[in-house]
Image (cartoon, rainbow, N blue to C red; front, side, top):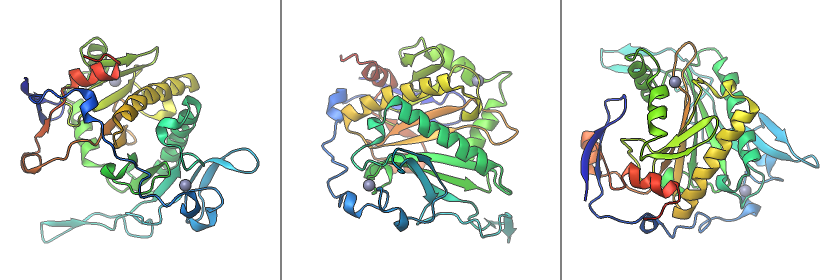
Length: 322
Ligand SMILES: [Zn+2]
Ligand SMILES: [Zn+2]
């Protein structure tokens, strides 16, 4: 039985690690089947042969026989629109707003309906990371765009009902608050705190994996059950900084984690963190399994209760069953 209040490495964010129930990792496994309510490839807009049913294609990575390996196009149900006015206004002291300005697009990760991200090979994941890199770079160069958010939702508990494996990209006329908080926190240290953190965590009870160029660990103040972060060892800011070999290592590290998440059959989100232009932040990927539901305490206080300690989660990812 362990109960501990912990603060994020650098942010003013707190969690309570309360492993009182002492569940083993296998007991977090769900029986959910994300294909249970799926109407199959015949009715799927993301499947090959249905390209005319999506908004006009922006780009693709070509496959064999005139097909594609990856394909991206505007989201039919966009949250932002490039037609509006990006200027932020404040009226009557308290009412700050702008048009929800930007581009919201979908990246279909594979032509195969039955494949999820975990089923992609390292090479295919690397290809996806390259598409992320190029899409971010392209969108960041557009006028009035301050940030490009890239994320993935897998499964209904992570916010998607479309089972065909895809990622999303939303460009914005503001820097998102979490990114801004990280940027502000990093500035309080004489050198990059994450460079130090990943060195420490690569040797701690929270270490998951290390290769020549990446470190994977479960963060000290994990908010999500089995939360895990992947960092390049080099202080890279964006995916554009990675060589092909380094991108392959990153893809392998991601696959290693996804393989274990598949054992839990957990829905999950993936979030990419990097700095806006001209700012500094150590690039990293956060993988956030969506097992627990946040309740009144979390919503009221912002303090997250996590019943899986990151030390136990790391042992699970390392394949050490207690
Ligand atoms: Zn499909
Ligand atoms: Zn760094």
